[in-house]
View 1 (cartoon, rainbow, N blue to C red):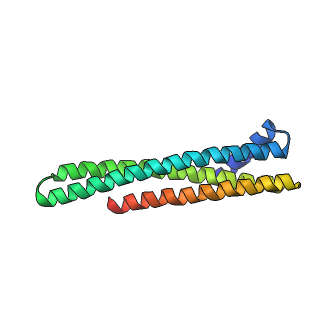
View 2: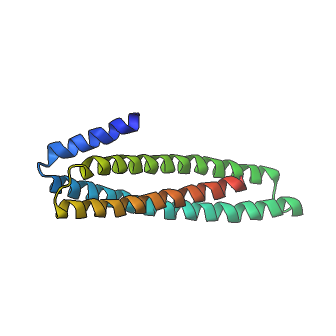
View 3: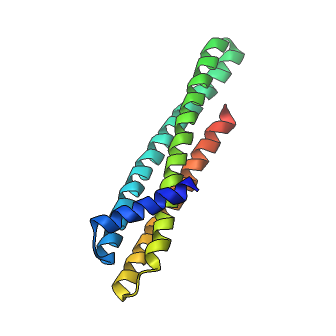
Length: 150
């Protein structure tokens, strides 16, 4: 329910800022593109962090067996990986909230789209929403991959 309120407040703000539906849609599309770029960067960073933890955990687990690393070193790396997983979980949740806001905004704005141009803009917004949804899935996959290793 709170997210629905956020989406409603978001659309209300766009309606206050822009008189025409065309401008409202353009602004929402611009916001969605910005969130997509942000999510793309986050995903790349998350993948890098995952790869680093995978390498280090593999090295330390092997080292503990061989006697070249200590359990304390492995425990410290596991704690670091868990802390990073918590940060990643928050990033996924935030991106998922953005996706919900854009999806709800799209529903609200599509109902008002009567011209071909406005419907085309709704189509653009749909593409941005699909892209963001895919990024949420990818980010969730990175978190799940890290979770399996800790």
